[in-house]
Length: 229
Ligand SMILES: Nc1ncnc2c1ncn2[C@@H]1O[C@H](COP(=O)(O)OP(=O)(O)OP(=O)(O)O)[C@@H](O)[C@H]1O
Image (cartoon, rainbow, N blue to C red):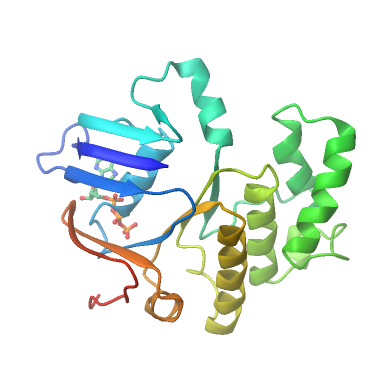
């Protein structure tokens, strides 16, 4: 589902590469934690998967396509296959919960009847039935993150990328969010999550890839967080 062949990335004006000669394969349906200290290259990895940036050398394959060669007009189609969730939720503040999730479908041209069916179903899946007409600021942080996950998943993407999704949440709320991501993963969606949250990683016992200075220093099938920040 995601394959990196000898991928290096050096940002313009930087001497040291953010990622160096990364070889990596993530299969369909896997759940992968990306860990490593600040600056180790986690966000750069995720940005390469989304083609928000391109590798300096090497090849990035996502959902069967070599994406460095993808022409610009095909990038939106790629991004439809990849849902994204962030630490700071990134909801539209002036839209209701329903509208936030519906918007993700409107921009890709889904019909009104599809939207009317998919949004309530997805809100129910994330445990927000009954809150469809609330505004984001009328929700707890955990609920806002559930809306963000609903928005990322409503289109049933092949891959879900989560960058520190529990970073602003207390431990109990984080457990609920992880159960939800696990449920999404069980539908067949590949989940890649960058995190500094050691308790979450230790609880889930999924594949753990650790980056250090742009290189993979650990790749374990049922790993723990295992590095001291
Ligand atoms: N746009 C950019 N321009 C120049 N250098 C960058 C840019 N983005 C990241 N870097 C550098 O690349 C390296 C890797 O950064 P990256 O953001 O991928 O790390 P990270 O593991 O995601 O860190 P954090 O856990 O703090 O989010 C760092 O040395 C960083 O300073």
